[in-house]
Image (cartoon, rainbow, N blue to C red):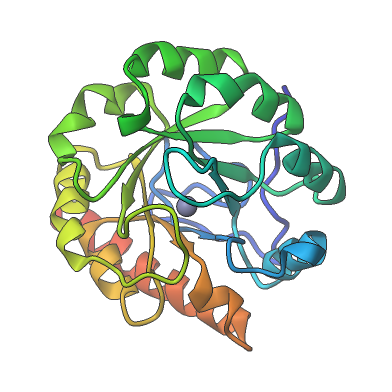
Length: 256
Ligand SMILES: [Zn+2]
């Protein structure tokens, strides 16, 4: 399985523990800030251009929302599109947010399509450990997500087995929803317990809400409409990064 190198930057960004964050998605070695635009609200008819534009604006990875019309009411796209996109965007890290029932079903297809990380919903499977092993065997990193009504305690038994935990800050299934600040205790709980875990937030994250998310301890920031709909996407990405890096530093100092 190929490893994706992070998007080239003019100078490497150094995170608090000294790893350059643009070499690779360092799994558990470093809690560095990574900004992952969601292309959900992009112009899907020219997705390659949209992805390249976001990467040029400083995106660290691309968050690709897969919806199946069962786990969530909407439909988006599947592995065939990812496979085409991979050919056109060879170096970006693809984080697949699988908002699907039976996530076991699409693991091999997504690995074959060139996905780097497979983020499933804990609510969608009865055998999370088997699924985690299946994803690893397919050569991808593993993310596990929880919906707003799922307590953080539900994911704790699996944290040590995965690369990333996604705390949804809206109900999955639609773009453009309002950020749920009352999800932040979940993020804080995870960050207090796991200092180097990648913790992702997804839903309603933009300039007005990044402070709360980053303060709680999120380091992987998914942002859809706030970046896509801005006429200055680079400035939005830079601002999200500045706030997230500020809180990574503060939180690492206060937890020592
Ligand atoms: Zn998502």
